[in-house]
Length: 197
Image (cartoon, rainbow, N blue to C red):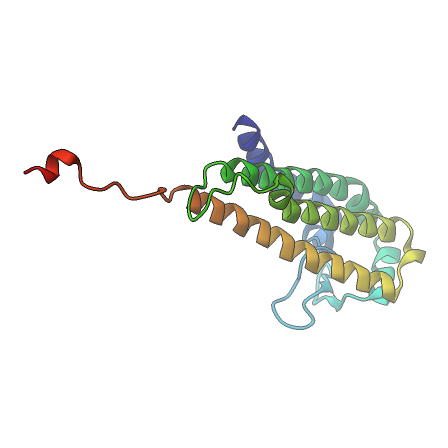
C-alpha cells in the first residue's frame, strides 16, 4: 500500500516539476509540443512560436525550429525528457501496482485474483514502452536533426496516439477495479431473529 501511495504521489508531483524546468526553454518546450496537441482543431500539432501563431508540425518545420532554437531544443532533450522518463515510470508503476492490488479485493461478479498478474500489468506496461519510445524518438530528433524524416514523424504520431490510448485505458482499468472492489459478494439476508418475529 505504501508503494502505491509513493508512486501516486510522485506521479502527481512530477508534472509540476517538469513544467518549472521547461519554462526557461520557451513556449514550444513549455507546451511540450512534440508530446501534446497544441490546438483543438486541425492542425492539432503545431510548433508554438514565441510571439505568433504556430506552424503545422512536420519534418521541415521541426528541423527549422531546431536550427533557430538550438538552446531550447537542447533543453527539451536534456532537461525535460529525462524528467518525463521518470514520470512515465512513476505513473505506469502506479497504474500497474494499483491494478494488481485492487484485483485481490474484487469478488463480484467473479473473483479476479485467479487471473494471471500479467493481464493487469499489460496496459500499464504498453503505456510505459510507448511513452519511453516516444521520448527516445524525441530525444534523437532534437539532438540529431538529420534523423527527422517523414517516417520519423509518422512513427512519433503512432507512438503518441498509442501512449494516450493505453494510459487512458490503464486509468479506466484502475477505476473499474476500484469500483468493483466495493461491490459485496452477496447482499446480507434478514437475520434469523428478524424472521422469528
